[in-house]
Image (cartoon, rainbow, N blue to C red; front, side, top):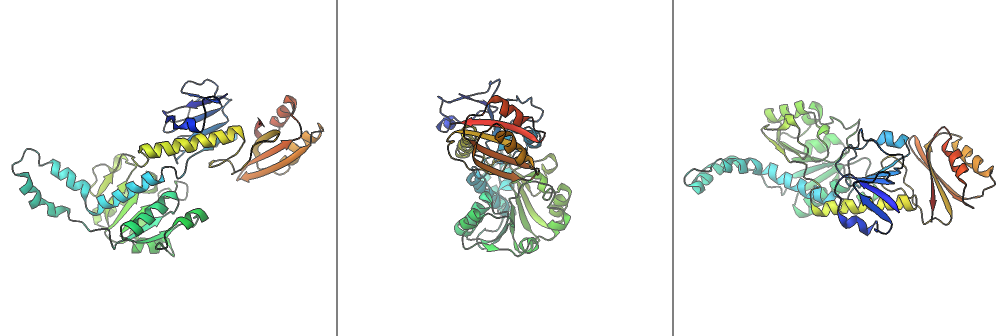
Length: 389
């Protein structure tokens, strides 16, 4: 029986992946094998030594201390693409809201409450909210992953927009999913200069933090609209507010409100609704549960943010999974300890990701506890697991 600690309410659809006969899922597991989390912060949380893996039912993992968990040999998973459709739909709504000034118009209409002849007042005042249609306008998409590709396709095929995109790290899968109408920008500067709307879909990291600064915003078409449904920190607030005040940008739409963006003319703040659909929450829950199940039962690693991708079938005997530093000579030490006990290594797989590596061994016989303990005592080994079918 595997024990799963759920830090947030998770849809019962997880039981399609985690049958109740083999999994106990609750918010009160004292020594869980794994953790399911959505928005709860795990920073500062006392994590039991029993925890082998954490799965976030969502894309971002900023609520999880990934570095510390990596050192402890805890696999961390997320669910990229599970909420892509929900976010993409909201981006399209953001373009409509910004171009047609819908949000401002709605707020203005509310102010007519209690006045006489509201229909006449509406007809008289609606001209201040005139905005262009999307058809024929150019959308620049920065980042063509699961969300960016859906946004690009919807804009080109459904809204009649000219779409250009850029993504130096685009996967083959996402490249195949793009409509033939999407054009590749030669450079970011070209995309910014040609786009009436710019939608950014890149992860937050050292290279992207504050990427929309005074210089980058200055390269945008005058009167353009910027849409940020990735992370607030991608945009420098001072530079953005100055661009709006000067008329360089017409609007900024974000799903990540910050205090300095509230009540700023031209800014539309959406309360992080990107993945807030029942369909999205179920997709994320199913994916997270499936990833934990495959890791716990077989050692398969899929969509981990800290360990290499490893695909494994059902174990045919005694499978040992070792998480360790990606250091020279360590695999030899591991195999040496095993051969010293006259145990045959039937199969071996070693894959690395940066400074971390995972070695999977199929052994000819069940290893004794003393061998597993010896492997765990190697200086650069973080975790040793025995997986039996």
